[in-house]
Length: 326
Image 1 (cartoon, rainbow, N blue to C red):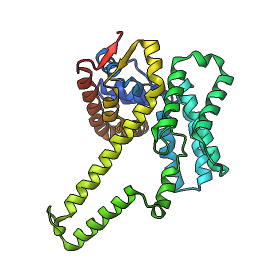
Image 2: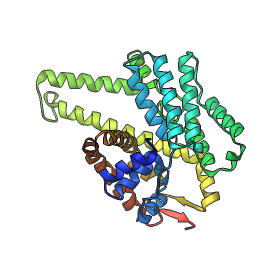
Image 3: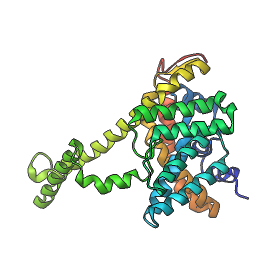
Image 4: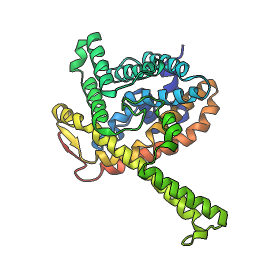
């Protein structure tokens, strides 16, 4: 029988420590093999949440599967299959409060798509919390439930989060925006159009350098890369700050400490956690089928994990990175 331990064992064979322990934490919430040093660094930088099962796992997995299925089957069929996947994942990893909350919200959003109804993130959040407390009233005193519900509420109200990032928007939002982009003229889209015109003009003129119309291609390419990079930073910062609106008071109340470096740390690592989640799932499945296949993915995952470890370790050494109790 395939269990969580089946996949954690495969990851332990394919990666060294602390990389294996970190990836197992990101995927399945297991912290048993995390070193004390790395755990302390994650706590100091306010990034320990990446090794706890959360709505992020549901969001990434559901978004990936639903958008893949959308190209194969219709939207309604893709939604039904994705709901089944969410239920299976919750059962597989265990019904922790944060996972159940994300599963219910994801399921409601997909049901809205199936029936062609408008979807409201705040209403869905309230329904999910209400359903959970009806099932188990004791969850109201559970710290992980409070943190998960608080972080999600902050993102819905203040995050301006992109579709599918626990924002209450359907997982198919990106596809809809792509289809309607040509009919909406925003300052951002107008700038992109100008960049594309400049890029097209430079290609026609055959230029490869800087500073002249004939040499505009590299300059435009750099502008595009810089724009993508800035969007990643901006979105991660918005999500981090929004999620902390309601969680900081809870953290101060329960743990008597706060990470001052957390916004910076989450911006620097937030963009790579989804990629590591996808790589880890792929590595686990391929390794289960044939171990050497998983090793190919493991090499790439090691690079991302090493970056994450380096960032949190360095930031944790900054004076006053965290203040409060030990």
